Length: 387
Image 1 (tube, one colour):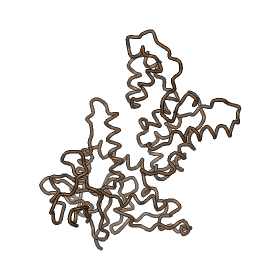
Image 2 (spheres, rainbow, N blue to C red):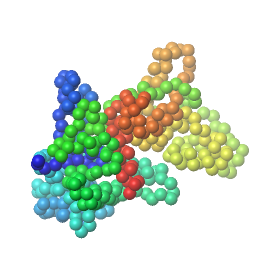
Image 3 (cartoon, rainbow, N blue to C red):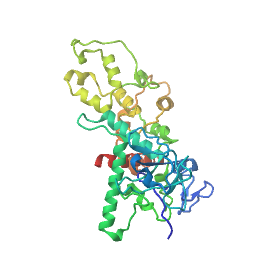
Image 4 (cartoon, rainbow, N blue to C red):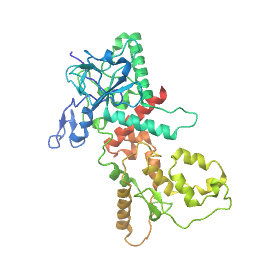
């Protein structure tokens, strides 16, 4: 039977490229492997980039022959994040780290004294976890605690412990903890593809292995969804800087309060606020509610800054603006001087995270990298918040 393949505890994908990828010329009808025309080779390179995540106090328990501590890239006290790890194929859960004399490090091993586990995690998944934590800390309610990567690690250890208990209570299930983690959500499709001896994905499953960070068609896909609609005209937006232009100032009569600031100054302040804080500020008074308008400028700024839909980063706002302008010019010629973008409708589309993640309805054509980004983000979110 051999040793099991090792899988990332977050995305559920393998430690490396343990599957066949047909080239564009070959993938004509074979349903048993991934097609290069759907999943280009450069979109699976992220699967080979791993780090090991654990606790400093338990490092000796993870290593076959501990001679010197490895370099720790973590900025959280007590938490260990290795440099890039080298996975040893066909040798089970073994990894090697730079400058550790070639010693073997065992993933999914736990320290019996503290029950600290050493997890192998893709660089990309760790990056998404960090982005989720940053977004949480910037938008969290006052009553909610701030998060660090230690909370993320604790969540993984908690799931490992539940897996261990389930295996002990139901021996027929066996133990999966040497290869990956079992989650109630089954990694939103990935768990069914985790074979004991290797990845079992077929054509149609390519999206689960698509790079969720580097998405070539991200902006062009969003541009295809941006339609004309009601709201503020695009001509008053400086999208290259995501700022509202500075027309003539208008002053209110109640100059002694925040609501008495010039509208343009108020909008400039509000621009730097997260979406949740902006909504809360509008509820403070009728004056603020009437002056902080949820117009197309607001939806544009919040969407392109990543505050409204935090899974959407890396959008080229200038390309979006120019592409929309060219599309409308081709449609209307010179008949209209200013055509409006419906940023609110676009934001509503991307708020349907389930449809994006599972590529349903009018989101069926979403690029597979976007779908996978939303999937990994959801897994991180549920892991941390449920713990």
